[in-house]
Length: 120
Image (cartoon, rainbow, N blue to C red; front, side, top):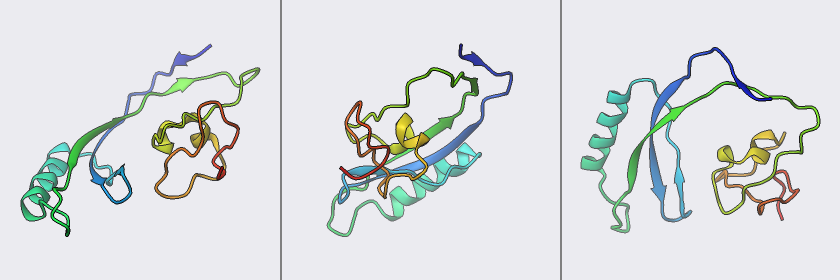
């Protein structure tokens, strides 16, 4: 049975940027200081509001948190891919894979597939 571990949750902040060429959000470097990330977001919005082709740059402030859990591994089904172009870090099968999917780190599988990060 899963149960929470008595460890405090960790928190970090980052600025994600939407890349219209890749049609995905790219995560920024996580930092502990929210104010520093917010100032960077505001500064970049002022200094670099558009891409070279004139499209507006989309950025957002993201709060990243962790939760520690004790989970049993005996008798569990292997993790399944989420698919649907989610970030690989949000896919249980991609996270469990020894070889991560290639950049842009999008889950390559369809829900329930057995690819474990391999190209289809």
